[in-house]
Length: 414
Ligand SMILES: Cc1cc2nc3c(=O)[nH]c(=O)nc-3n(C[C@H](O)[C@H](O)[C@H](O)COP(=O)(O)OP(=O)(O)OC[C@H]3O[C@@H](n4cnc5c(N)ncnc54)[C@H](O)[C@@H]3O)c2cc1C
Image (cartoon, rainbow, N blue to C red; front, side, top):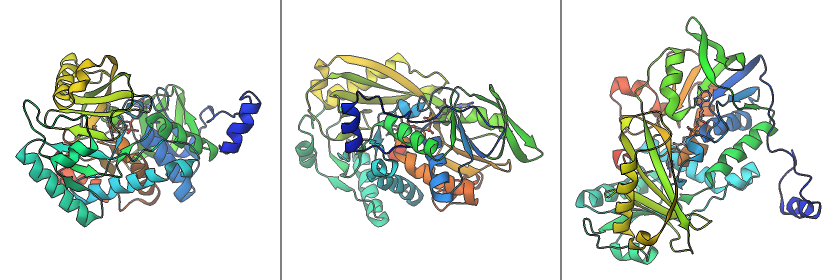
């Protein structure tokens, strides 16, 4: 694979861009792989990448029923932060955030990581206490955050209205090295690197069954034939329940729609991400100038990749309170994804009752930020049977009552 560089861009500019190679190959499936990953979203691709990079396992197929990055990875609002309360969460989200810092160089692909800072607004006394507690926990965990005053919020975000009609801004949890990245580029960068290592990314290949010999996995059935494997990683976000059912076990997961929208592009007006979780709306500005706006989950389970209409209205109403200038914007597009939510709002990275089958799910409304860290840990779990980043997130915690409660950090936030 030819490396991307400033020199390569100049060279191709001179020859009409005719010399670029395809970023990844589209091979036919082989009969057997050491590891099959189901789902070519960010987490599946990152898992495959770190299997190759950290453990030298490259006889890997990534099977995707649609197109790579077409699930939640290509539908999210790209917020990256690591200001979680519990130690296992801080460990995996901060590992992920730190991997993002150098991911473009590592993948030789510009993922446009922009550590522009994220504020989570405190608009009730309850939130003030919750976020101060998180800031103290983060200090102990080595995650750099601080609780800031309303005046400091206004300095960072001049367009904000501190005295909203329902909830005044009482402060905020500020993480200066949090931010955003280009979601498609994250998927594409991992895909290109996996393909360069000789892995097979097979799109339009839907897994329809999981084959077992007793308690041991032997392969999968797909719309492109049967494919054998020694180990199987299920990384399908909102479809996790279906895949678990095919493998013969159940998950404590609910699948619901989560939606987002963008405005027409405008001149730069806000250079950080602001989340208003009490009124429930959050916003950042994309490099194109669109205001990227995230809303809430539907209150009922579904597998539709679109959200219900009243949420758009609620989200926009919340934003107009927080940022009155939004009232004059035209909205361009709205879309949704199917997110996989656990009771304690923490992910599942675990072995399963089926020998050789591993599950990575439950990232809910906030897994984009965890993409590289999740891939790093899950690859280790598949390769070695356990991983310090994943061990606390096993399925057994639901039986043992060892919940990792992240309802403040992830109950409504992204
Ligand atoms: C509107 C919205 C906003 C969000 N905002 C944020 C945010 O700001 N920050 C943040 O951190 N997170 C956010 N998230 C959450 C984040 O997008 C997800 O947690 C993350 O992208 C999950 O990645 P994934 O790779 O696990 O799943 P996906 O990207 O969904 O990939 C799973 C893949 O599995 C494939 N698949 C499913 N079934 C099969 C099958 N049977 N056979 C083969 N392939 C199959 C799917 O087609 C899909 O491509 C948001 C999500 C949404 C929907």
